[in-house]
Length: 310
Image (cartoon, rainbow, N blue to C red; front, side, top):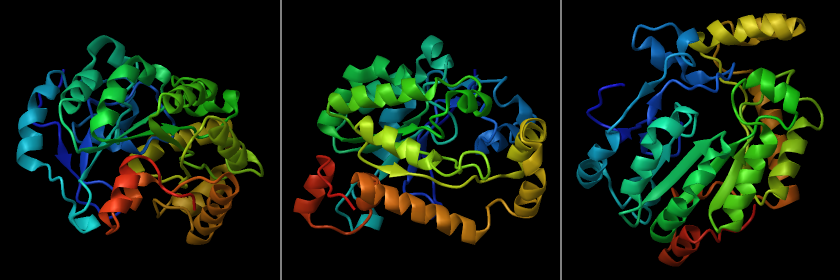
């Protein structure tokens, strides 16, 4: 257990489209080789390699939510010109539906508190079909607030996914879960992230994820190139040496002094994503759109999931 004094945490970075985060756990059992959030264990003087082995449960954290929302949360976001609520992102540094959730239920407890309120803006990012356990609860939240589900699918290749994300549900299960969520009227899309140079970026790979996302009813689709922090490198680079040794030199050149891949490469990926969005009629991510000053009528459409495709 991890003693907590707060569960609704402010995010002041201009690089992300949300103001608040909720992470019910610290650490993640899925053990994704590329996970950027391993640095959070180093804050506790733990080795980054222990991120998937030592899971800290923020049990009872939901008790803080009522007072924190009342004290901190604003229903008028300055970024949107005051016509949209601030956004709460659940699962930014840990998967809220990792196996520990079956036993401890911290995510569900937090959602039950959020379901008592209206007018919020909430997203959940996960790699797990376990989210279907809370389908009825999610439907209750969506009746009162703007709710968006992001299903992360880095590849549709099952064997590769098992290598990269050892204990995460296979991609087909995630996509099936998204389809069921969409059929229930809940807004959802796919994060094909991170895109791994030389591993998941070959011709047709990203396109296969987009096609599968479209088949599952995804409303939006996005992808970002691997962001490799020093703590992440401690796990990812030995994995690369073992499984993809031919790529070692390229990764050393690209990431030895940078956390980002070269800008030219990232631009090419962004162009591929743009074309795929256009091909399948994917929307922009709704909460991104909500950050722009819009008319009340347009905002109502956004809250109802009626954004137009771009």
